[in-house]
Length: 329
Image: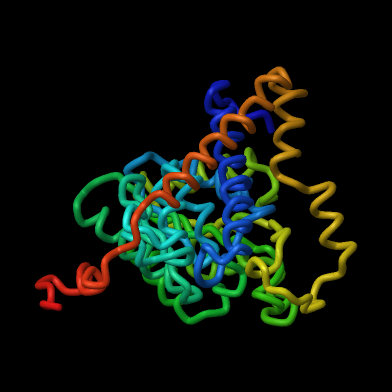
């Protein structure tokens, strides 16, 4: 499949994938040094399905992520400064330093929020899609969730409701094969999560999550279906998480064979696969592609510098953004 995309759109796909990878490289380093509090879940290896899905959306469309949360807003086009400042718990962060790594939200790009509660984004996305339908807009809501979340009750409740009400939603399962350390083969007998779609009366599509263009095509079709009032779609992206469940765990849980990880890293890296296609199929010069990495590195350095120069929230700010009528400290 050779996507009918303008040259600049193809390069923007590469730019966003590089942003996710290099932003998270910097975040891992800061976390190791103790400057990023809490857990840090990274998307190394999953950049293709994130960017392919998000590039199918308009800026005003909604997006809901999960605990592996940096890649999604970056894939939707969020600026890096506010995201990095949030990881560093600074008041200039997208959530004023109160959300941290697992609870990012950036309304400027339609990112409604990420959450550490597995599967909880599915009904949130259904609600956003319901709101769009009630307003009479043609906005859609894209929801990212993992294979582990597909075993939660929220999966059935949210998707069933979206199907019955024909809500403009796309439910994208990032199937990386493991829920923390639990292989998907031990948590469901269904070969594909997308196979459940027909049970709800909606399409279920399986795609290669390492191919940004294949994901883009599938989600674009699902978006068209949603905008035209035909209801939701489940898109399952078969992908892989290169890193541990969370960064700097400090121990090997031994749930994945080293050869399996190496095989995916060496032969199935979505950034390298896309680079080869840009060179061979789209005849974009290597120098132009490689220049993107240097530009993104500068963006990431700027984001880290901005975050570290920013102030921490004042203690009294713990009471803001909690109730409609703030409580006096």
